[in-house]
Image (cartoon, rainbow, N blue to C red; front, side, top):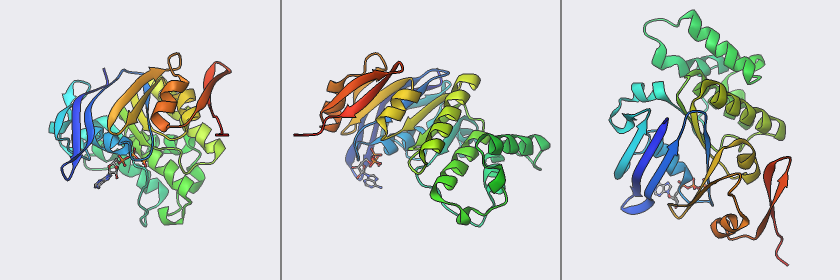
Length: 253
Ligand code: ATP
């Protein structure tokens, strides 16, 4: 098991936001956290990434309690890609290299540089490697944040709306790369998303949050229009195209 979350409770200022969440991710699995605005998706991801401290419950990554781990140790296990990343006067190369920090003892090793170069190439960012972050577009910046998490070589990758700023080609490219890394390295990944059809295409399992609780967990075979209608309050139909479910909203008359 890569990730095990049990009875997770989180509150902001005494208001419960996450209520008794249970989740599990196996090696080679990509889990999509779905649900309407304000359902608690980002808060859940931040709890798993040890950015928020839950009021109750346990979070284990490969049988280790991440709530008791130092930030350096967490960074060796978990790569977290935030919804919005900050721009600083750093080059793309240096920003991505910072993802290797948990591995660097005294000096940057040639292996660290090699890992960075490979990921920059994989994400088609090599041509931007000497550009400063504050000179990038929103989509380019999002790809840099993903590159930085990938060079960490984490066992668990957490992605908060990883394609929100990307054009269609880059959406497909990034989700395909995440899928390939999850499959080949047998890591686990959890991503939050609003684009249901991309989630259905690339993730193995879908966890629907509603008002801070898990309303339903399903896969391609068990997804239904009822679940989506209940969670989003919108009539939809589910069609099968190229062996993948596709959600089509039904326009109200
Ligand atoms: P979205 O899809 O809009 O990004 P989400 O499902 O990721 O939403 P969260 O960002 O996790 O939702 O927010 C869950 C709830 O917690 C919302 O009601 C939000 O208003 C509230 N919330 C988020 N951050 C804070 C904060 N810092 N202080 C108080 N309440 C917060």
